[in-house]
Length: 179
Image (cartoon, rainbow, N blue to C red; front, side):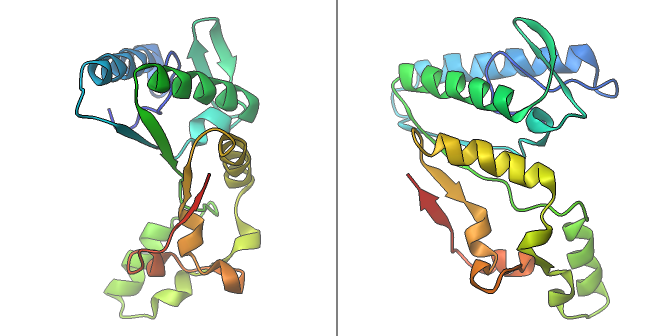
């Protein structure tokens, strides 16, 4: 269920995926939490997701209170509840941020540059060009740094130069952790 977000009691909903898919995500995540409660050897839980469907106005989220529009505020509330449940299971959570998004298919660009023998820097983009959705996700994650460690993948995108070089992320182990 890799497309499921990392939230308890909520899942993204779209007409394409359908209500059954959303309900299966909710059940899957509940089972994962139940399994974690019984795994004494697990001390840390890593949460990683694009988070896009939870902050984008183009999505809806079925919750125990019904289907509601996705929003950064809803995502923050759901993540706080999820983190509290993980902590209640005796585990320490850490969140890995998604990579910066511009709306372009960076993977396709990198594949094409490799196939055509081009310099992968043709796929670089200005960090100021990140899509609003990335800024919304970053805002939620920044708020969560007050209570949970967040590993920021944008730290591996040459932030010092103000541009993102996604091809360098694959060859660098650089990341930034905020606590």
